[in-house]
Amino acid sequence: MSFPIHLPSYIAGEAVTTGRALEVRYPWDGSLTGTAALIGPEHLDQAITAALAFPNESLTRRDRHDILRKAAVLLAERRDGFAALITRETGLAIREANYETSRSSDVLEFAAMEALRDDGRIFSCDISPNGRPRKIFTSRYPVKLVAAITPFNHPLNQVVHKLAPAIAAGAPVLLKPSDRTPLTALKFAELLYQAGLPGPMLSLFVGGIDEVVTPMITDERVEVVTFTGSVEIGKQVARTCGYKRICLELGGNSPLIVLEDADLDLAAKLAAEGSFRNSGQRCTAVKRILVQESILGAFTSRFTELVRREYSCGDPEDPSTVVGTMIHEGASAELERRVAGAVAMGAEVLLGGGRRGALLEPTILANVPREAEMVARESFGPLAPILPIRDLDDAIDYYNSGPFGLSGGVVTNNLALAMKACKELRAGTTNINEVPGYRLELTPFGGTRDSGLGVKEGVVEAIKFFTHEKTWSLPW
Picture 1 (cartoon, rainbow, N blue to C red):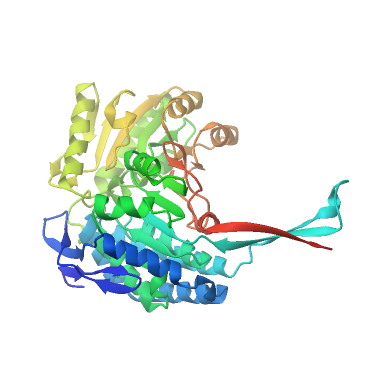
Picture 2: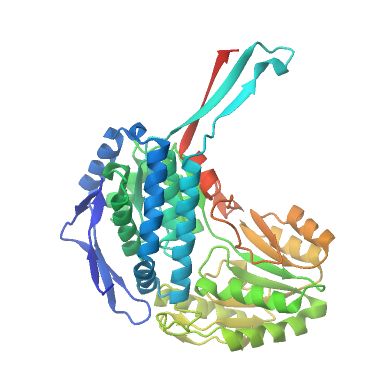
């Protein structure tokens, strides 16, 4: 793929150009990656009208399965091109972009499988003294229209996580990707049309907040709103969209809790992977490393040496680069400010801390106060603050006292402590001897409190979210 590329928006499968375009620049050097055509309110209305007029019930389960399977095949054939585009939009290392395309393939494959699964239920009515000789049946039918908004940090996988379950369910979608990374989403829309998705089932576009986004989520013809992004914007979406079914997948401040019986080599590796993969720009990234005081020194030295040796940063297109840039220079400058604030409060930078434009070096800090902004708020980038804890109870109390509830990891070989953490951490996911973000694209994923509202992500849960359940009964 050669750059820059210039893409239209898509309204009910038709390419639309308006003479107005959004520029996307490569965070590494500021060069032009491409442009995406901006739409207006009239195009949004065309998209809604076309979606509601299309007889989506004409798509059988087998049709939906075949579209998703064909999309998976096409994505596999074009993996290198999608990875190159992801890197040019986000500044993520090419190895991360390749990994993202493989995760997206999983979503398509799982959604295709679920499209064939009959999710109805049967209840016998003679199980109650008040029962009758009847059976109650359930079946599902798709919602009439979905509005979806996706973030920059996973410009393909987050888009696929909205679209693949909706296709499996038979629900039409309007999708507005991040203004930072619209090109990957638009190329994926092209792929879906080529896989056989009828145009009215998907409109994918970019446009202004007042012109397009707010009208999209407030339109009475839109039945479901699904948003993945920051807490602040997510809460604004909830206040704005009115009486609709809503799903918010928001931020996290995930800890990796390292207890004194932990395998320190494993703990160091998990801390590095959790803190620095995807340039630390994951809602489930390790944002705080909580280490029991008795092993603090041993863990810190092992972790620091591992990162110094294996987690190089630099040119995102270099296959040897492990940590690429952040999404833009302003984001890296903000984290540089938070590092300085933590240092002013007594923290010590053990490794990294340097910044050049959007590139922030993988940064390890020791002695970070719990009240420092870096750890009190979500710091979305390659930072690894280390904080001492007395024991697991101290770690649980610290995490549960905060506003987030997305995920956490605990490194221990003590089964009783592992079970205690799983039971008592108020998080959507707790992983033992693994990074907080580990999951399958099929399994439920989401958070509580400021980390999310509504149904969890994951193919199975999302398909349910994009459908209504109908109950009916017959004499038996």
